[in-house]
Length: 122
Image 1 (cartoon, rainbow, N blue to C red):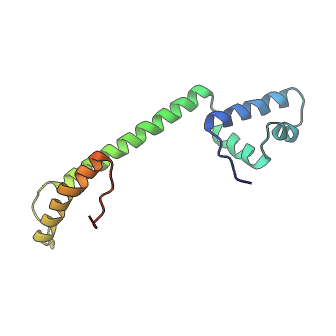
Image 2: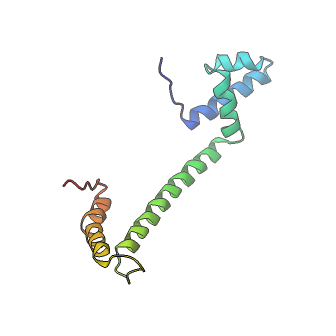
């Protein structure tokens, strides 16, 4: 039987259901079984999401998306910095550096813009 990966919203809902059932006097183990999960994921989820409400969960998702966007922007800027010509560093072969810049400018940058993979065997 395959594992079903629960969405964070479903997890928070199930945690709240267990809290309600426990508040009605049902033992915790029985409440966990009634919402059709086992004890191990319940305690793991409670540790991770127990203090969050649905609004906080939405804020967490928004911040994670923003973090991903900023990471992509930083990687693009880092690539641009590598592409820009500059004085050769000590011990570096100038021709090799020029070749790398040329390859990055011609292949990697357009592929990143189009969200494609640039493979060396084109």
